Length: 578
Image (cartoon, rainbow, N blue to C red):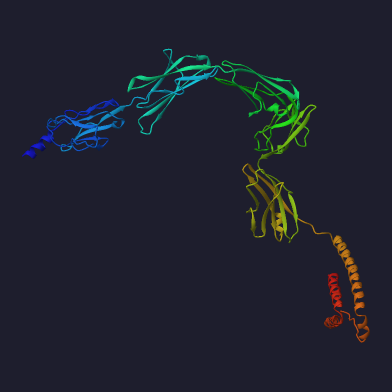
């Protein structure tokens, strides 16, 4: 009966108090109410979906306590010294009654830390310099607002930025105030005030402005102008308060260690014209540096060397060529091989360049009665390929033939192709056709080779096409049959060759006979029974060959030298017959 009554009571239980949304400042005491009259079951407090404990046992959370009269159904959650970790959504749940309260959002506000002005409490600056003040207020929730105050008035124009910290809840604020030199005075006090909802009245800090005056310096150079190689005197005069404590000299940024007073004497060269001499004067407040160039007379020397360019067709090409020289020099830009002056300035600008603008350009500088100098640069123009080729090329019927095209291209061609009829060939061999490509200093030569020229080849139109990233060009080439040499010319060549062979045969024969007579002098007398019979070819060809072979064998057996002469004689005879 008790269980049944308990279930009835639990089923009839209702919230008389539920937790509400709260906004609190970190460190405060917070109580979230929860009352369920007539409910005797287990009550759970839920934080961001997780139970804090069972019933009133919240031992895992030392700052959390369940308060109120349990018998009256009071289960209030009390949080001491609220922290940022308590910024969450809370619920009160009656387990047996299957009830839950409305979710209550606990928002924890965190005041910013004390604001800090960089460089404070006294900010020093040089006279004539602007003032930049930076103030930061960190670790606030929500982010702090920062204002600047001077003489009781808010200064406008400050810039600020916020940074979200790693916990995803607190933020740091940085504000920068800029004041021009005319808007600041020494001794002024400027306040930085930071506030948010956690500290409405804000927190503030201040700095005092201290404007310091550096030495006022004048640097004289005598004499001027001066020829390179002569003596020059530098004098550094200064007015300072407090007084000057130190002088330091430098040339072109390099310290001159051997000089420490207010005077510097030196023999000057051309570098004194481009590398200034500086005098730095120091007092307890800081340093002032002043520099002067010397008016040294010298011939042209290059200050900025022009660079060769590679530009696209139609783009502008700009060359920069800077010289130093004294007295004043004259600069002349010209294209190599042309007498036309393109510019008298350091800059040479070529508008909308064409491919014919490519070439060498010269920047020349002249110092009157002193000297001259020049520098050459190249201009390369990127554009579509250009093909130059003989439109009609020749080949012999039945022989190997070639047609060629020459391609100039900057950048180099990405692709070269030969096409005829329905065939396209870029490289390698296809049937009777072979494509070869050779790179030269002037450009690319592509050759289409055809083996065993046939009549149809002379009726075909051949296209040589080249591409690069800027476009393409095509050349149409025809193959023409090469005419044979005239009969008269052939006969003349044959007669000349025949005469030359006869003369050569006679010379070799005389040489061989002379040598044979020497070698066979004793042999011939001993073998007087040897006979050589000459038989006409038309009597009996077989007999002639047989007797001829026998004669050669006999002669060779007598002396090997004769075999050499016979071989030469037969070879020349065969050539003459042909």
